[in-house]
Length: 200
Image 1 (cartoon, one colour):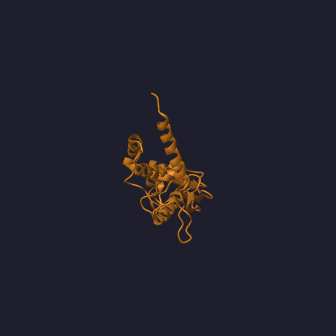
Image 2 (cartoon, rainbow, N blue to C red):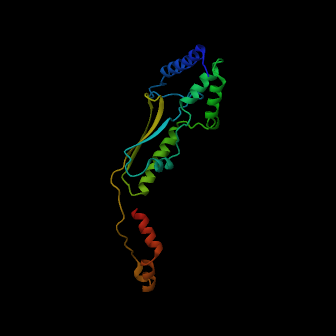
Image 3 (tube, rainbow, N blue to C red):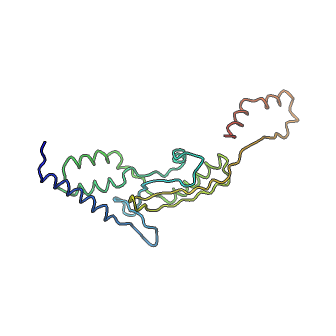
């Protein structure tokens, strides 16, 4: 199928608009707060474009994501372009439909950054590490803009420190029990399972 010069000029026009829009994205700063990219729909809210964990050596990214309640936005810059394309009356219908299909299912539940939730996530991460023997773990967070990708990043900075392992269990006060009960306690499969799980 032959495409006219007018068609190619309009495609170039749209690419030019996208480049201009990307270069004109402004970082938002208010009252000395670090510069962030505001959400396009809630100007005083900030979407989380990405979540990072720095210093984590013992657990996978997926395991740590399962511990926290903050989640990254799945929409990001696509929503911005959708709005801009929608404003343009000469934009091809197919382009508008494609954006609508991509954004439709996820556009209603945008997760925004919430400081209280981030602090709660730090506590949840510390509890997770503590449960796995990292009793001296230190966890902090930072929410800042990634100017290369034009997104906001929630970063959890983790210093794991030493992990403590259970090496033995001493029972006190068992001398008042009968020898057969003491033997059952020592041979208990449940106790063996508990000891095995505590070592992991």
